Length: 135
Image 1: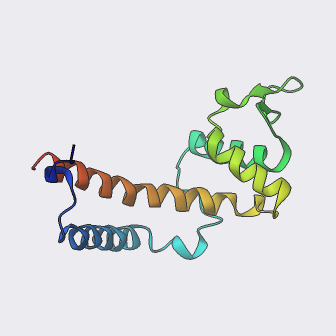
Image 2: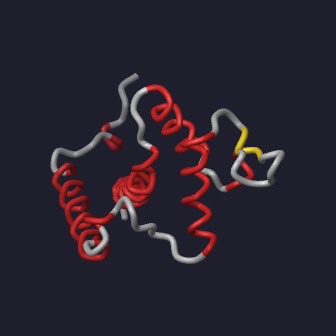
């Protein structure tokens, strides 16, 4: 049974996607342009909770592995999920840090980059959803 052409991408859609990503990139550069040169040393989160959300992946990537986080609740430690540690991000970067190359000093820059790239990803997928719904 053939798939309906209703859900296939139209030929001109890639131009709209490209324009959307370009416009989003320009807005991000305008909004965050002053901190992009110092991306690795400038946290985007303001306040103490934002600092904690940078501290927990930094600590985990440098010192821990598995499900145990030793940066809180001394001497027992804590489970990774209860620390706002962003486990998937921390596990992948921790494995890279331990087995491939030492990247713990670039964790803030990687986290900031992923945050801004997620804005572009959200713009793209919302655009695709709205196109599919005929909006």
